[in-house]
Image (cartoon, rainbow, N blue to C red; front, side, top):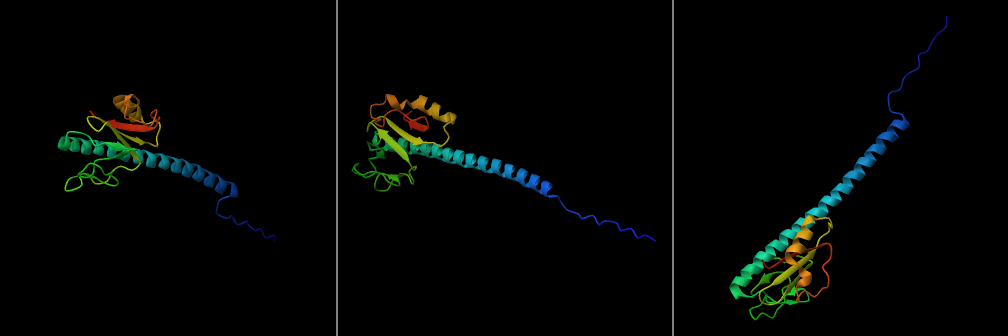
Length: 162
C-alpha cells in the first residue's frame, strides 16, 4: 500500500502582501503628517489674528483714557508708564493700576502717529489666508507716513484705527 501525505498549508501572508500593506500605511501616514502641519500653522495664524484684535480693543480703551494712541519706537509701544516714556515689553498698562492687555502679541510691530492713528502688523504663516489682503486693503499701511518698514509684506496681517 502506498501512503500519501497531504501537504500542510501554512496560514499567513506572503512577503508581497506585507509589503503592499506597509506601503499603503506609509502613504496614509505621510498624508496625515502633512495635513497636521498645515492645521497647526492655521491655528497659530488664527491666534495671532485674535491677539491683534484684542490689542486693537486695548488700544481703543487707552485712547478713551488719554485721547491719543501711544507712540511707537522701532515697532514697540511707548506709553506704558505714567510719564509716557517707557516701552511696553510683556504687558500694556498705564504704569500704575490700569492694565490694558496682560500679554502683548509676540512678533507684533506697532506704529503710531502718537495722536489719532495706529497700525499693528504681524506676519502670518499661511500666505494664502484671505484675511491678509482684506486687512491690508482696510488699513493701507504703505500710505501711512509713520509706517517706516517699507512696503508691506505679502504675509503680513494688519489692524489699524477704525
